Structures are given as structure tokens and as C-alpha cells.
Length: 565
Image 1 (cartoon, rainbow, N blue to C red):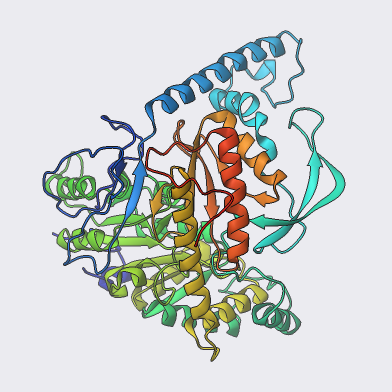
Image 2: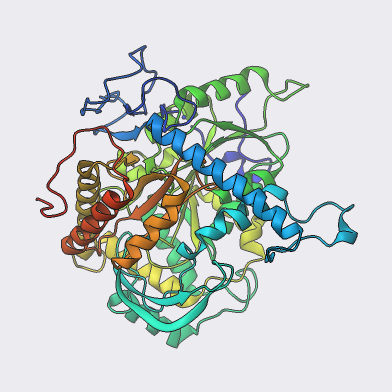
């Protein structure tokens, strides 16, 4: 018996799938240097590995599911780099325990919060390893995060200079400002993070009309006409019957998933899903099973086992099976293999929850996200979720779907019932930017920004790969992870790039696997070719200094003197 969507009025909602991500360095064996591709639907038996020097990594997709080439590359971590990375963490750990010994004896000052002696018999407030990692590893490179910005975080930004006299435990502002730093880290995909232009003017007008805050929930005195206009526009943009908007993107996931699933339900979650999806799944009380990232074989096995075996002990059918995936995975730069997920979802009568936080506005010929990118029918996705914080330069999130679904969430979602309404100028920013993307402002500005983002993404990814860096993800993803691996190079890369007036985001454990530290670039339509070339030259220079060009593919040696066409 197919699982039902909810146990109440949403039973009528929707009726109706993993692609295989072969490895990114995790749990893999064999020859290092091989670049793997994934998303093969019911793929036949084939050779596991190719020669490391082979450059053509394109795989032809099932023509009945994909209407365009779909290329994703995840080059293996070179063996020597992996060994040196583990050694680096081992050395840091040894010195960390030595410093803890000195702190316990009062030889070195301890800045971190700890339990008092009289509380030792209680449940600890602080997890020991997390504390150890924070005080001995994270503090060494803490200066790379939380840098204060004192301008619009557009293609360029101004940073408040700060310094630390106690090895990054505390910071002091020097009173200086670092001007015109090229911003390669913000999710400003379409360049709507700006303080001039139509969006800024319309938001200013909305502030004058409504004020900044509402001071109430939508259910009481906080439902404005601008909120209803926004929701109607979002539904039209997504191609669904209805939608609802929320003031916080994180809460859109964490507070709505518990309204859609509960005890007796099964949630199948991608192993690399965002923390908001993970929290929402845990709060729901449903049984959670995790499938390998973008791996269709893993997902289909879980679906088949769920149908065959049912609930534990009783073996009764699950009330419903809900698949949670993202459009673009923000740490991997990969795109969900949506055609295959939908095919599996239909085959096994499950329901699909799609988080398009990073993909809406950034993918597709109309900017409609991953559904638009693959040319699929929005009706095949049961719950369409996204945020306004990236491509729209605003804040908040939305859920779109059938009218019965949205009506159900309006009366059952904690994020709808208890949260304060979205700020009016934020709502107006979303409305104006979305109309520009849709072309309803009677200009071609939206289409031009979509085209510019696509061109910038292709150019930036190609140049980094030609330089010899290991780049993860899909060729069309504006999220571009560049592998750093070793812990000492995380902080060094961020600092060296800032010296060259390039603002970057560096990421390490626990946000990534321990040997897969990386820099994550976010390409924007607001970036000019000169900005990208400047950033590429700086990246190439720092890559040479820090020896980051790990790729075994043939590289072009005309950098940085000539970036080429």
C-alpha cells in the first residue's frame, strides 16, 4: 500500500526517485588521480577506473532521462597528499594534548570555557573532542572567519581590519578599512545584493509605506497585502498551484518537515544534506535512513527495503516515505540527479522534498532552479522549498506545491503560526528581483544576469581546472570547491588571498571530511571578466606558493601571465 502524505487534510496531495556519485575521496580504493563522474541511472557494469592522465571524463546519460550533458567531476585525493594531511592532523593533535597538559598545570593560560570542579559528576556541558578541536586546531585559523564587512557585500566589498594579540582568542579593530576586496565568497549569484538600482529603490519605498517591522504573526495582525502578493508571485515563478513565504530560510526546513512527517513515517536523506534538513528530520520523530550522496543504487535499495520490510517489528507499511534532497549541494558544488530521483520516487510511490536554496535563480534558462535546469514538470516534485537569501539578495524562504499542501502547512507549521511576519522591505526586494528574473519588468536585465552567471561559472571553473587545481562539482554549478586538503593550508590560503585583496571562504573539518578541506568560491553575475581574471591570477600565484595544484591532469602553463580567452 503506497504511503500517504499526511494523516489529515493533506492526504489528497500528490502522487507520483539515486544517481551514482562514485567517490570524492571517501571510502574508495584503487588508483589515485582518477576523476570520477556520477549520475548513471541503472548503469551497466563498467570499468572502475581510467588512467589518471585521461582528460575526457564525460559520460553519456540515459537519453530518456536527461535532455543535456550532465558532467560532474570528483578527482581522487592523491595518495601522498592524503598521507601528509593525516600526518598534519596527527602532529596538531599531539601538540594539542601537550598544550592541554600545560594548561592543566597552569603553565599556559586557558581561554576556553570549562566545567567547574564541583560539576564534574554532572552531564558535561561541553563535548570533550569538540572543545579540544576548537581550542587547539580551529583557533589557529579563526582569523579567516567572521570578518566584519562595512559595505554592500556585492562583487566588491570593504572589510574592517582587525588584529589579535592572543593568537586569535580575541580580536581588536585597528581602525583601518580594506577597500575594494573582490568578493568570491557570498551567495550573490545574480548580483542583487546592491544598494542602488530598482530593487533598492523599491525596498526604500516599501519601508516608507509599511515601516521595517510588522510586530505580529501572519495569523494575527501581521498579514500584509505585500505578503500575499509575494506568495502569488512565487507560485507563478515556480509553476505550482500555491506557495507560502517564511522569514527565515533555516526555519523553512527545520520547522516544516516535522509538519509533513512523524512517527510511523520514513525519511530518506542524502548524506550531505544541509543541517536545516537534518534538524527538521530529527525533530519530526520519523525514522531516518541516509543514502550515499547522489547515489541512485543506494537510494533504490533503501526504497525497496522499506517497501518490502515495512516498519520494524510490526512490518506494517510506512505511513509515508519522504525523500529529502538539495538542488545544489553547497560544499560539493554538485547538482542533484533530479530526473533519476523522480523516476525512483514514482516507481516506489514515495514523496519528494526538494531544497533549492542554492539552485533557484542560479540554474535553468529561466532561473527556475534545478527543475528548470532539467526541463522537468514542477508537478513531479511534491514539496518545492527554497530560500530568498542567495539569488534574490534578501532573506527568508518559501515552500511551493499543491494548494492542499500549502493550506495544510498554514495551520500546522510552527514557522507559520508562531514566527513574526517577513519584513516589508525584504518582501519588496524579493518581489522586485523575482520580476526582473521573470522579465515582468519589461527589460532583459534578468535574462542578461542569468546568461552572465552561466558564462562566469563556465569560465572560472575551466580556468581553475586548466591551472592544475582539483575542482569538485558540476560544470554548471556556481559553487566551486577547490581542494586544499592539509590543515595548515586552510588558514594560509585565506590569509594570502586577502593580502591580494580577494575575499574567499575556506572550509575544513567538521564541515567537510577531515582530509577534504577546501576553498569554496561562489561565482556571481556581478563579477566582471577583469575581476575574475584578477582573482584567478591571485589564486594561481597562491597555489604556486602553497603547492596546491594537485591535479594529475595536463595543465596549461600560461598562468598567471596570460589567462587566455
